[in-house]
Length: 395
Image 1 (cartoon, rainbow, N blue to C red):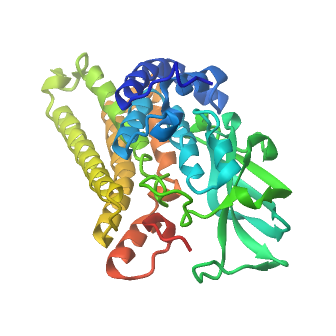
Image 2 (cartoon, rainbow, N blue to C red):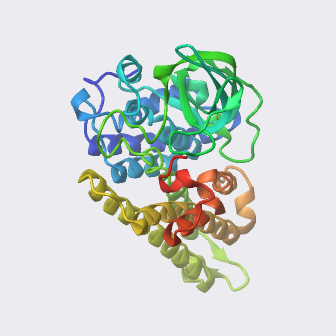
């Protein structure tokens, strides 16, 4: 791991290192994809950028970047390699999780500044109450970055004497998140065989009647510290940097191709071809609108949560919808550019095919699904969200 003395301490330094790393990541993308995980030296490269310490509190010597700064770093990394950026986005949440833990459990997560956490917080596991904690059993998919993680989270429903326990808010089920050292889970090799985000190493992992002490089980509506990073949506705020980054990379790539290409039916250089001009301009327009919507919403939200003010329904929905829109706009941009360059897109070493697969895969993530849009709409209208967590409601 890097040390505080050697590591960057400001947003500008981390962003500068991320830009340098993106160049090297681009050169390793094929290798990363084929390995279906990040090679150890790529993990070291990411650690050295400071990405995994981005939200470490200043009181502990960390840079404590705001969500806009975090998102920009992830966006830049995604222009280099999408899987690496995805793992960076997931893995940097360790200090956020520490805000929901007490004493030694929190200290363990913060003991060194570049701790990486992987895992699924959604409650697909079972936590049976036991003296001093829980006996945990389950099988969790989508453990992005778990092959290089220090800690693993695992969402569970709580059971008592074999029966589902109601939640503290009156919900029929009680959702808690367990956090354990990486060596306490079993990673199922071969379980991550996908078309896109192949290099993210998002393997399935399991625990079988494994004891987790009470101090390592938490809820996202029960922070142990105050502040804007101790909120349920803190782990989601920078996620849209990944799709925005891949869309930016695709646009830059195709604009570079255009300088040398000719539209053969009319022998028109691409910079003078109407259909090319329209495709590039509309892609820039789509990406620019999505990016401004996202960063503007993040800035407005951040201003209020920093001040300790309650978000309105519209403000909460804005950040949710801007995030979904970023994923979908990126897919539109990459798809249109893929079609524009036609058969060139399908041949190596063109990265367009990988980017198309990556962006389509990430759009299957729960945070980009229709249920998220429905939940934002229901939140605005006073209806019932299908996914209450996405609008900050912990059942």
